[in-house]
Length: 159
Image 1 (cartoon, rainbow, N blue to C red):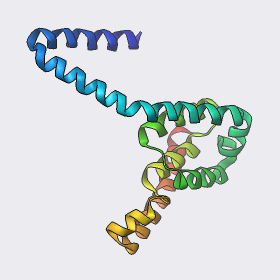
Image 2: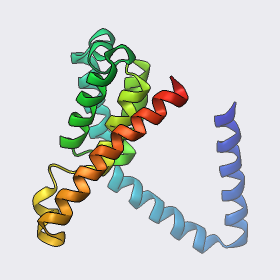
Image 3: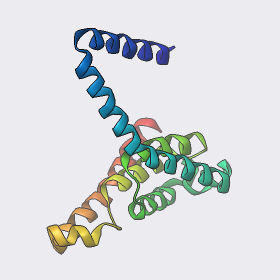
Image 4: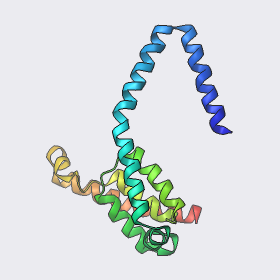
């Protein structure tokens, strides 16, 4: 029902925009289409990666590795995986939702998404080049530690 409402609202606003200024609306739609074309390969990659992960790892395996019952070892595992994985944030959140539905825990997923978006082991050489070794190391260590704080808070709030 919510989807129908938002799609109807978008269609209504598009019609109003077309009535108000047809040329601007056409330009905007063309820009939106180009953005969609640029994002499409990453989205297809995300869908493929999620499909492979779910084909290889059953919900029982996911639950045992990063499920709520895995405790802090699961949080550490999720944080390490997130730290060394390079996935854009718009891919991380749908992936986390799918993992949650397949048995992952809230604390573990919060550590995973936090480190995924804030810690960059793969990007350290590039970051060091621009910001220096000391800053890069300090930023990554603090971001990694913050992920555990986030996991703890999420565990208290949700769990």
